[in-house]
Image 1: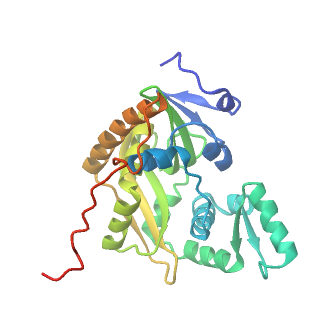
Image 2 (image 1 turned 135 degrees about the vertical axis):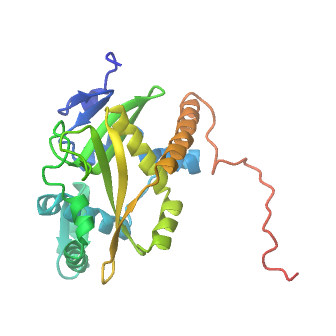
Length: 294
């Protein structure tokens, strides 16, 4: 893969080759999300509805803004929080605050309320010891990386440029520093971090496929993914949180599923019509007669 070249717009950012992947140590959120490459979110959406993956424009919701702000503080720290997040103080309906909100959004910043800010700080202080250990690796991360946070990788899969951005990358706790084995950590806000509740979230939002995608990207960079960990935290008092480790077998199954959809993604790029919710345009509907008495 030595002759593989990145798109021109990525070449302008500092990067280096690690294995068969390209590592971007200081790529900001906006450049990553707005730039080229198929992400975990893209391919997961494609697996649900090909047409939506190519045509849908997703507008940030208040819940998404809250999650982004929580991520900035809890994963990246106050420096990123003060840089990337704007807090509206007082009524959001005054002319000055409306103007501040629009100006901030135009700059790609996240806008939250004072109440949300206070909640996020309470969430940070409520992390259990195990969650904090995964989110704050100190110096226990691969030294080939400039930082353990927001690690952006690009690689080619079936001729397609793919990308991933891990919240935290660290060395396994039971292995000496400098080993090629890593743990990938992803922070999630949720309404229910019970085992059943978060399992339902994994199924609903295809977090298992996200884990499989991240694992593949870091393997392309020559790492061995020892574990993939979700730190899940509730958004309401008492801000309960737990650490969930993904099953390795589930990630292997997930990657096989994604690989098949990458093949189909290539076909659509090359002219095959995109399907709507991955089903025919005419469907025989079977409601199951669920409302009828036996």
